[in-house]
Image (tube, rainbow, N blue to C red; front, side, top):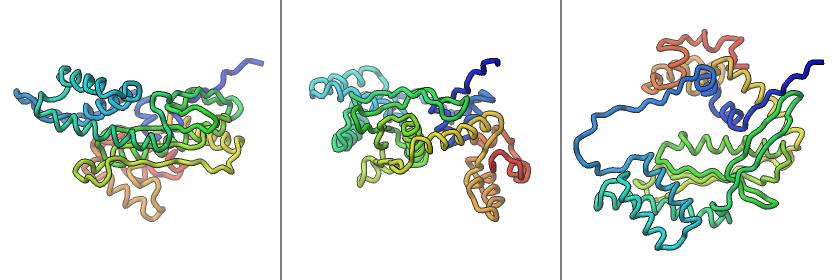
Length: 296
């Protein structure tokens, strides 16, 4: 009998299948990366503000730097190096940006300490499990605490809408907990920490946090069964565009056509993956027909 190699899926693929399956078809099957930046004329002046991505990167660097170099002298040296690097405006225009980064990181440090999470000690946990005959999940669960009751951690620093990073992070951790249960890894729960989308305009809350828990009654066999179903969805998503069209795919039957029209007529449609795959004038019946992979 000829030997058949197993189908190998990664945790990342299963996470994306659960969160945004169309992304798999666009990125991996069509090999299209649809990031669009609104190009603006670059003025011939010294910038006086800091980009959101730069601010997020600096906050991430500072959080991990201070986890191993907590002294004030080391932090002052970090500040000086950032100012010299030119990635932020010169003083005094950069003072507010630097202060904002420090305030965010200090709030995150306080919440992490309350959970007894040491960022410097977080490690990836390798995964290599059979979830069904001929189907394996191989990869790693990142940023886990160590010990008998582990925590899978996710930290996000960018100033963005709640649905951009924080919401998907909760779903990602749910899949990671499912994988851990299937693999027999003692990850007790997940923990998401993110910059609050309204801060600093609204100073009530600097960060958002949430603990994600998998039902304790779920057995290892049940976790594998759920992952097997998710792997079937992943393989479908690789060959068929499983598009949600906003809230259409999850709407009640009588509301689907209306939700489809709302999404297609929105300002965001022309920057969506649905636009890339289905064009500028998609028809509801062509996408959400009886045999559609979206409805399977």
